[in-house]
Image (tube, rainbow, N blue to C red; front, side):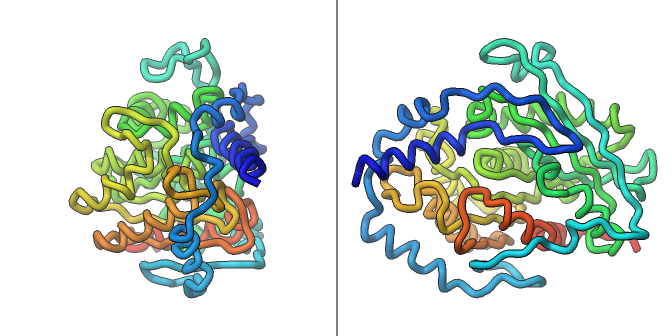
Length: 357
């Protein structure tokens, strides 16, 4: 039994660390995939330990959380077990359509990520709404794994901007570094945020002919799995740049250790958030019933459900504006969950930001 659990967890960890597939119309070439299963096995010596009774009791509270509904305030919620795509994902007649500009960045030109296994290409997609006025500073969503192109974000933004539910905003959707995805995303430091600020966003402004706001109130990070971890990391280490964070199945677990984060991103709920003054962040996060490590012991620091549950608990204790959503009958970065919840999650995160009508 322990062997079976261990093999399942190794496969799940490999999925969490592998590059995410891209989707049309901004369709990067297949990324180089690392030997994820072997890497996961090396990093998860305690992965086969089943959840302790205390872990089971902790997670047993989640299915009884109140149902998540549009307009809900801060707090903990649940959704499912049935799902339906949000209507905002469907193009509507009469709604102005934005454009998506794609460009390619060569890692050999990067001072931050030149390529651990040699040079590679990174595709970036920039959504520009039809209502954007050239020369004005626009609020922006910055997403990891080119998130957004997978889940109709351009169409969602078209509809919600037209309905005055969101400001006129740009989205910069950045592909991962392939074999070095975990190194980029799971490392708990300011490096990836610095890379985006110094190399990606200036290029995005040039290629898409837009100007992005420097106001952190007008900047949001977005990602899933390890991309969710880096979304929080960007805002945590650079709150002068980002105040809004959206994560699905965030990898707030122990994957990439460092001198300042001996337990990797597990440190966020173990030490960073509870031991520091609250930062001016507004956070929306989701985890699924069948997420990675859901049956494993929290002592191994590889249980995604408990990691996200504890993130919500420490954010609540520190007075953060946040929503935590537990998805029943769903798995790791489950498309059916994202397709239903993304518009409302955006609406919650941008609450309070001026919307021109």
